[in-house]
Length: 194
Image (cartoon, rainbow, N blue to C red):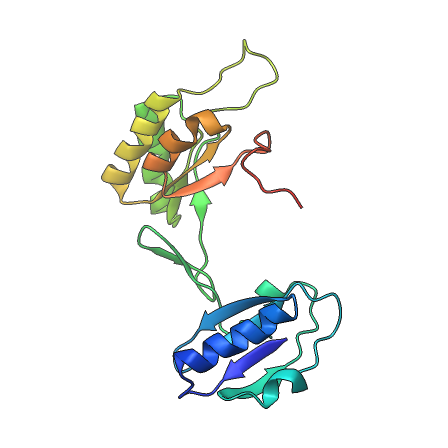
């Protein structure tokens, strides 16, 4: 259920609707918009009766949301999501082209490839500083030195950089460098379950 508040709804009216939702053991998710606030009702096991809220001050409309993925449905959020990575906008009609080597092996290699992918139209550079391997004798990536090279790529080309994080021990280090973080498939402690 999505409750749409009137344009002139007061914060007190919005708070009262949130309280009424929570008293029914649902979760209220306020969604501020350009002209009005909407409130999504989550964690309901079945249909929610909109009439419970339509008589409340400030409520304009109650829209049933029938999609299983409410938070990403157009009923819940009709406008497109745009994510900004560096100066690159992704979403709606903005398409991201992310390209680069599997692994950062040297500064020369990374800069050469970054300049080439930028010339070809890519708007983000991806290279692995840390590499998951089944054998400890295989190349594991340059690690921190690879992150330093990624910073040089960003400085030289202006491209935002994307790299993978494999574990919690290196997460902070990767986060300081990367404009966008790819979560490694062998890193279950970072990815929420369910």
